[in-house]
Length: 119
Picture 1 (cartoon, rainbow, N blue to C red):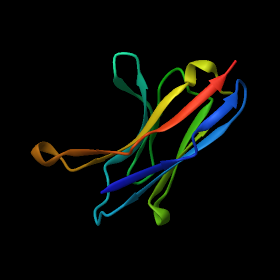
Picture 2: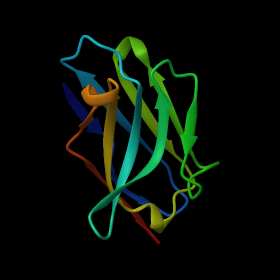
Picture 3: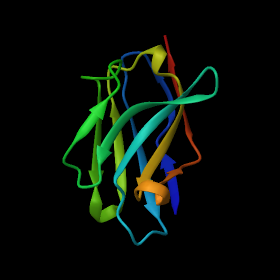
Picture 4: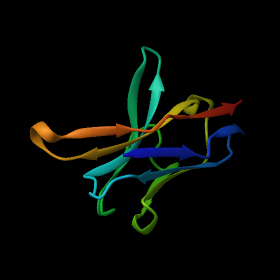
């Protein structure tokens, strides 16, 4: 499974960016896909997640009302529309796909895309 992200870049505070993540190489559906941001301490924290059927979404409190995650199943792609961006949104954003259950549960990661918000 490969996850390829795109859409990162530099934007001024108050501006917008849209990230894309396309999955390839799999014949199975994912439980969920989401976006994570790398924070100090080298941890990836959840930004937004969408269920495999696209029916449910969840967001970090800091981005609710500003970010929207969506899914195009035909293209095996998820998107993160980021509006009213703040300098605190700066970081490397990683796409994640969750598959399986129990012992066979596995998470896949993209290579990351840099997002920088200038004040």
